[in-house]
Image (cartoon, rainbow over all chains, first blue to last red; front, side, top):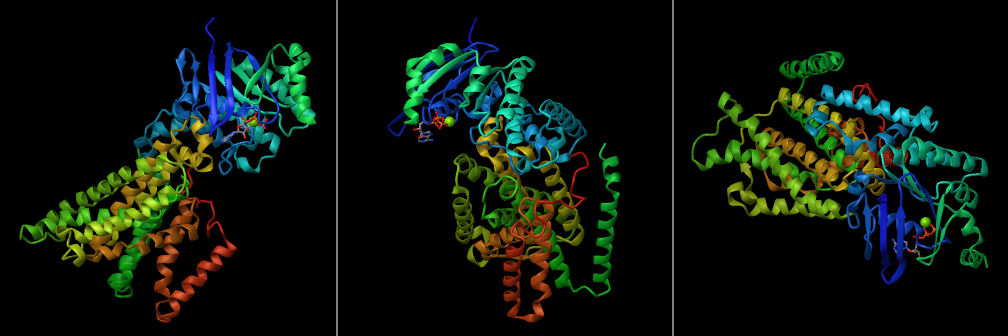
Length: 255
Length: 324
Ligand SMILES: Nc1ncnc2c1ncn2[C@@H]1O[C@H](COP(=O)(O)OP(=O)(O)OP(=O)(O)O)[C@@H](O)[C@H]1O
Ligand SMILES: [Mg+2]
């Protein structure tokens, strides 16, 4: 089967600092894969490269047989890759429902002229968008906050909203950057269920960065470990837990 | 198709008609001086200027500080069509005649389109880059426009253009203001408006959600420039004499003050700022020199106690859309 995403020999430098080195990854449809590693390993940079925020220094990224490296982020989004951010980036001064509706903008069904005239079709499409947004918010139990400003939500809800918003773009691949960061064990467990659920309900492939081992080991089918930009291990959760290099990398971080 | 919508809004329409009648009647009976009538027309134009500036600065999070430059483009382009070409041909300028208006309305529109084109041309390369380049470029632009006009003999050069017919009247200003605010309100409440606010709140997240932020910013900037251009055309045909110095950086600064005092990410705020701060200097005219002191103090007080503007980011009920 053709992989959904294929990254080959990707390198990335920041002014001489090699943040990502010879990175290779192949994701099949409907997989949940974990990307772990100590602080500064280059995990977020990999996400930034996939979503077009950075252009790889070399190597290629193929999504659904199409090269996407060097493409604009909004085009990559349209092609079907969505993400969340390590430091949440919601539209804080917009309402919760509007945050979701922004994701529908690229699929808008009315033009600028209709927008200015507030035409009947524009109004109807707005209602369609609102209905779809509410449906999505319900799944995340966020519908009661629909009219609240996103900035007024508690931290855990903001994380959930960001995942919901990413799903609203109807992606085939979703990249989650530390979704459980700052959550207590109960919240993290709930999130685990949500993520499993998502994969089945939305038929998405998930690539996830996560520090909380409980979450990673609980949800990921495959794990890739990075340290100083290099891939140091790759395999099943049980294999990774026993891997010498991985243990050293994590212990090294603590001493 | 639009009728039932307008009927639903009849409360607003009736209030506006009433307002119009009051203004015209008080003017006819001599209560309202023609000077004050002119101020009221400026209020309308300033509302459109401020709301359109708010589209860029408040709703899209860019920082344009040369909005007066687009006004200048619109003013000179329309005056060129209604006045200058006739003066150059040595014929008389058509005034408030059928022919006069047949030229005037398209001329104002063309003024708006020229401003929009200018906005597009300076916006496209500038808005592509992140950061505060727009502020520098728009400020430079408004100065460059003045310099170009100054050295252009056909545009009256440093002497300005006189003999512009008085075409703009209260009815025209009112229809223009209401229509413009209505159009901008619809736009801002649409998916395009949301894409703008998303760009303002987080440009990176907006891109990641599939918003072409460069296109969005350019669209808003161009649209706002169009409205400012139309304002310039109407303004010139009230003043009947325009000069490059009508459009100095101070003019642009006025609109920034109206906007941030009223509330930059609110149409109602922009309108309030424009109304209050066009009227206040006139109300205090009898205080002579103290007028500017009062004005400045008022600005400081408002900024201290309402840092997000008088209105903040709320909207009056007649601006809000029913469905959101
Ligand atoms: N925009 C940037 N400019 C320069 N250097 C950067 C930039 N972004 C990241 N880096 C550097 O690249 C390296 C990898 O950073 P990255 O954020 O990808 O790490 P990470 O694995 O996500 O770490 P963490 O677990 O702390 O989030 C770090 O040394 C970091 O300082
Ligand atoms: Mg990171």
